[in-house]
Image (cartoon, rainbow, N blue to C red; front, side, top):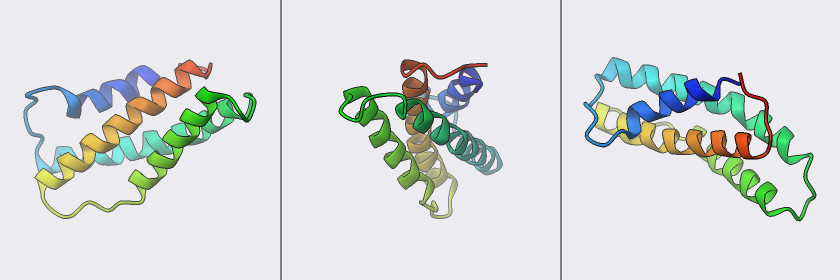
Length: 109
């Protein structure tokens, strides 16, 4: 897992006063983040399986996985503003999954 690259991708949409991406750039970022989230979910899931079922960090990571799956099931409405807003939601959940991966001892690239 290249967590640094995933964080850098998310950061592009979360920077305060960042320049609005073009429609094409927004589409590329959405596809990239969706793919990164899809890669991270099973990795974080595997990390949780090493923990006791009543472990709080495990519970939090599993809740984040559920949130991530919910975000992936959404199809944003047309328009660059809506794509960027959806992208920011993906970026936040991507960052959270990266945090859980690191905190639960997942391997990094």
